Length: 148
Image 1 (tube, rainbow, N blue to C red):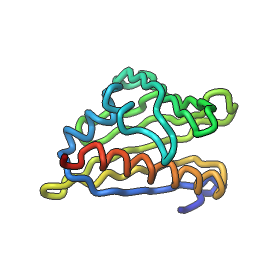
Image 2: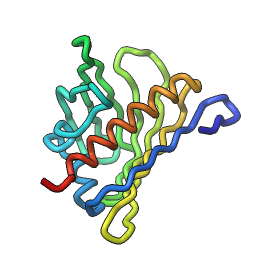
Image 3: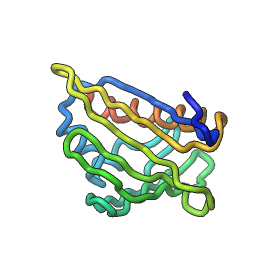
Image 4: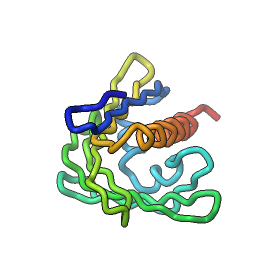
């Protein structure tokens, strides 16, 4: 993690997955697939909406073990299928400035590195929570493509 001049933190999380960038891009942008794998450990995705165009909105619902549902939403800033997505990231109702997420699908032979760069995070404690969340999401994505 690194902080910029404003004190905001940038986090990078990576995972190598046995799938093509095309399949991974589809899993990240098609609501049915997104709902199947999305979520940090012990969190269930209860809904996914994706308007895949620059300026389009997305919304993802996370249900926590205590039953609380938290919605993440934002707008797409860049779409370079099947290699890159850039979008804003906000928790609905939190009243904070939007963060930014860049997801890159980097082919490496028979596998693809999925690289998530999460920027504009307010502090290290929030970045640590995001790291755990992204690690859980990437594990879920990896399991989504696991053989069998």
